[in-house]
Image (cartoon, rainbow, N blue to C red; front, side, top):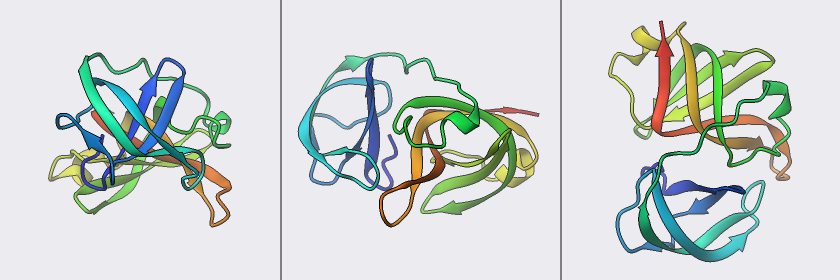
Length: 165
């Protein structure tokens, strides 16, 4: 969950879905790894269905799901929207925006943007040209007609990314 822009992904054993926090309520503050009972209304969203005006009741905690790992060319169609994924690549560049770091990551078959709310001050010195393994919810890139235009950003959550020299 990324508290900055007021958005989150929720996942169960069948899949994941994007939830707008605006107009949603929770019995306690939300964070990654909580088990919740969610009731709300579906809305078309920007690409795939989303949930709005949600009522979330925290039931406990659980480990984050085991991430899926598929070749990049299999995830660019939007079918995996909201699913917990692991993608590997090399950081080519990045920029900070609204307290989050947007990393441009090259991988076999293309590139993706990894968005992370937590990062070191000297991220460019440590992470540019580093091989990374990013875990997070996969979000599609879409056009103005709500058609899939690619994969990413990988919205990293509490697991963040593993940086390998």
